[in-house]
Length: 429
Image (cartoon, rainbow, N blue to C red; front, side, top):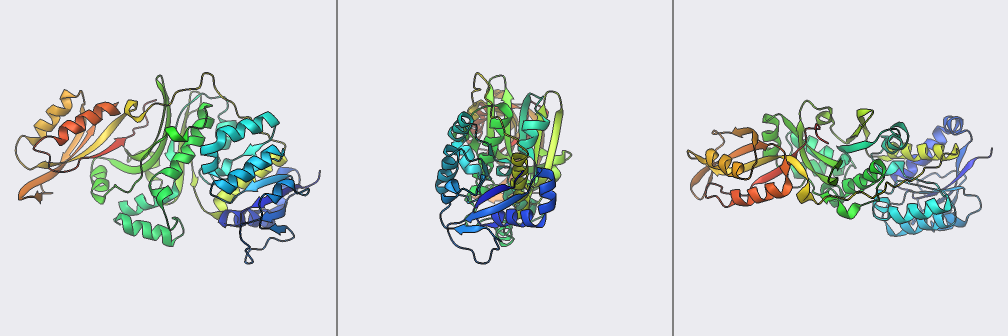
C-alpha cells in the first residue's frame, strides 16, 4: 500500500509539531499506520523560511491543497474560523478526508460540516480539537462505546488552569496572566481563554459526541475566571475546596446541562490536584462508571500528537460515524440547572447578622451545608466594620438562588457585592 499523502495547512506551533513527529517517528508511525504517512504539500498564509518542510511543496493558498493530485488528506491547523471553514468545507465537498484541531470551527459549524461529510462518506477527524494529548474523543467513540454517558466534566483550558494554580500559590490574577503569556501558554489577547470561550467550544464538541446531540455552542452558559480573587481561593480552601474552571455537560431527566464556569470541588477529589497547564476530563458511563483522563492540554507536541493519531486511524481505514439520538435532547437554560453554591457575603460585624442571613436563605428553601465567619478578618466601609461570611449551600436550582441573592443584597446588613460560585461534588447526575 502506498503512503498516506498529507496536505498540511498551517505552519504555527502545532503544524511544526506535526512535521516534527512525522519526520522523527517516521518508522514508528508507518508501523502503526500500516503504511508511511508523508507530508507532500504545506500551505500557509505567510512564508516561514525558518520551518523545514523537507521535500513538500509550499503554497500561500491553503485551498490549493483540495485540488492537488498528490494529497490524500487535508490537515487544517491554521486556527481562526473563516479561511479554515472554507478549507474544511471545500475538502469535504471534494470528497477529501479532513483532520483538524479547530475547535471553534467544529463547535460553531460542526453540524453542517458533519452532515455533508456523512452524506458523502467523507471522514472528518478532530481528536486534537479537545484537550491536547488526552485521547478523549477516541475514548468516547471507542472505549466507552458500550456505555450510555450521563456526564462529562473537566478542566479543558490549560491557560485558565495555569492561572488559577498560580493564584492558589499566592499570585494575583495579573501576575499569573503575565507569567502565562511569558511562557507561551496565553495569547497577547487572552480573552478566549480567561472568559471561558475556548472551554465552551471544547465542551460543545464533547457533549455532541457523548450525548449524540447536535453541536450547541450558542446554548452553553459561559463564565470566565477574571472575577476570582485570592480571598475566594483562600476561603474555599478553608472550607475544604479548590476552585477550578470546569466545563460540565450533564444529562438530566429535564434535559442537558451545558455550562462553563469557576467551580469549587472537594480537595480530596483527584481533579483538585490537576494543576498548571494540565487538562483532566471525568466521564461517567452507566457501565464503566467514572473514568478520568488527564494529560497536557495544550502546546505544540501534545496537540500534534493527537493530529498524528487521527492520521494513523485514517491510514488504517478507520472512518468515524457521527450518530444522532432521537429525539434530540433539549438544552436547559442555566436558570433551570441545579447546583450547590458558595456564597461570600460582606456583612456588618454585629450580633444577629448570620441568623438573619440564614433565615432569609431558609425562606427560599435553601439549606446551609457549611459556613465560615472570620471575626478576625474585619474590614471597614463608611466607618462601619464588616466581615466576610462564606457559606456552602445544598443543591438548588439557579433561579431560586438568583431570587435569594436579590433578597440578600437588599438587607441592610449586607454592605457590598455578594460573590457566588457553583460547587460540584461529582455525586449527582
